[in-house]
Length: 243
Image 1 (tube, rainbow, N blue to C red):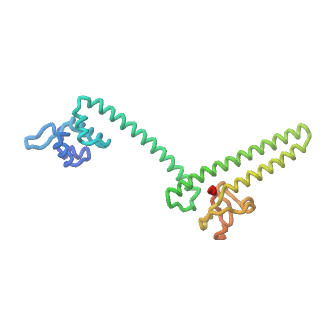
Image 2 (image 1 turned 135 degrees about the horizontal axis):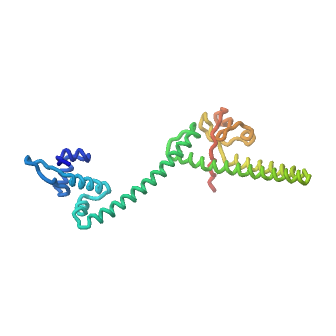
Image 3 (image 1 turned 45 degrees about the horizontal axis):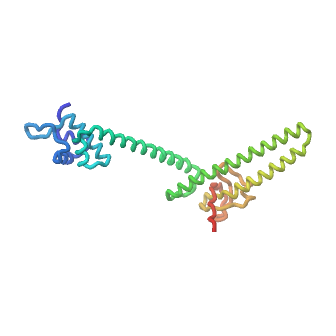
């Protein structure tokens, strides 16, 4: 590698000429030689030293500390420890950023379900994520109750066929209906709906909500505030604070 002038070195590492001149004045990075015309010339070793200086400076070390480290007899050992710490820091930041990226993706996915809900702050996005997690739990509970009732009905049907006693199957149907009623009431007691027209959050009457058309995340309801009938977004009801 041919020798670099101050301007060429500054351009290669993206610092100012004034910075290199300052490092020279401090004795931190002096040119390997001077040309016959008095121009500072830097070697490949000078370039490596400058890159190391910039790395350590980026880690938060002062120029005085950097100079002491580079001039120390234990410079290699100290640098190894510093670089180990920097590597660990970058790994921690990478893990943190990966977690943030997952959160961003979750929020973005959640926005598809809440396209009609105004989002004005981070708290709004956190509320959406809380809603999604809470609603998922409620939906899983409903599925669990449904599977349990199906199992009871199937067992009662098989028993009735084998034994010839259909009263058992009839009793199982009654139990299943009671379970279904309780599960559905618990569901409607845990959710509200947001009107897609006026964005009001409301609790519909049980009869209206039960017989309304619906998708997995919306129900066709009449808003008590604006009177419009639209598909309203299902949200988790806020817990009432204890008095």
